[in-house]
Amino acid sequence: MEIYGTLGPSCATRAVLADMFRAGMTGIRLNLSHSSLRDSARQLEVLQAAAADAGLRPMLLIDMQGPELRIGSLRAPMMLCENEEVQYYSKELPEEERQKIRRRGRAIPVPGVACDVLERGSEILLDDGRFLLRVTETGDGGSRGMAMVVRGGMLSGSKSIKVIGAEIEPPTMTGADLRNIRDAAEFGVTGVMQPFVRSRADLETVRRALDENGAGHLQLIAKIESRAGMQQLDSLLPVCDAICIARGDLGNDMDLWTLPVAQKEIAAACRSAGRSFMVATQMLSSMEKCAVPTRAEVNDIFNTVADGAAGVMVTGETAVGKYPVEVIRFLARTAAEGEAYRDRAGS
Image (cartoon, rainbow, N blue to C red; front, side):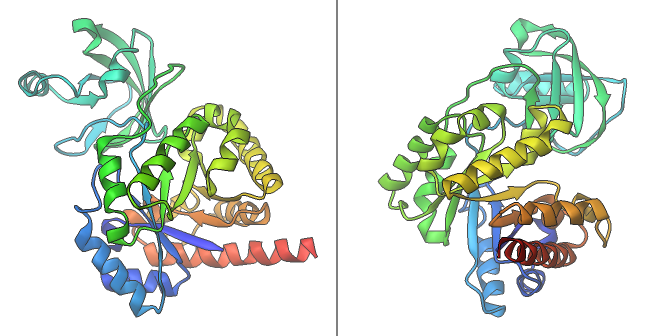
């Protein structure tokens, strides 16, 4: 059973990471949505030293940018209050225009391809659906506009964005993804997570890039984060090494009450094809602030493993949460119970 944490400020020290490994962590995810392997070189040195302290050789998965859409960086976290209006603008605008917009008030930088499909009444999900905005006004050919906050909170930069009901087709890989693949062997990467896989062609593109850059030995993990990915699952399974059921954005692409069925169906397809799978997102979300998980979270982990998962992964819980070591301890021990139950039930 693989137990994955995610690197971040809360587990940046050698001592904390070593304790996480001792608590049961076997691998770690590095989110490259807004950084690179070279930018993370010092952090990865600390990671390898911590793993050595715990007597382990860790799995290191890089989560690439891929076709996932994200807002731009913010100068500081922005509080979005319900029923207030905020500006948005294309982050591809010239810097001088972006500065003018920011001077007129708080504004959210949005990918140009997302701006292109926005119209009055469009609904925008940010940060895995934590925030919901509704467009009230567009202008300048769609490169900027206003939106009402329907569901608010404290928004940080570089978070995911989805326009509900819109079909947007960014390229499979970015230039940054290719650079990270070229550097992967140097930094001890063991696997590549391709986000928002839409078709077999996406995976073949990544596999070709791996082969051409001396990284063909790395594990290729297809993240299922949309209904399009689910619909193509049978064609994806033969060309990847594993599946990640990434419930954050997958839950944005369907009614939340249908997400458990989706997870069950993906798990069943993986078992039938003999392909390993892992599950990620909000497994211990309450532990970002609390030292003890909810009973529902523990049941979720147990049932996920009992259904055949070969790995479980936490993200913000270890990256920015207050209790990264305790998160891993609960994750690993609960997963072990699920694995033992699965073995007994199958015997």
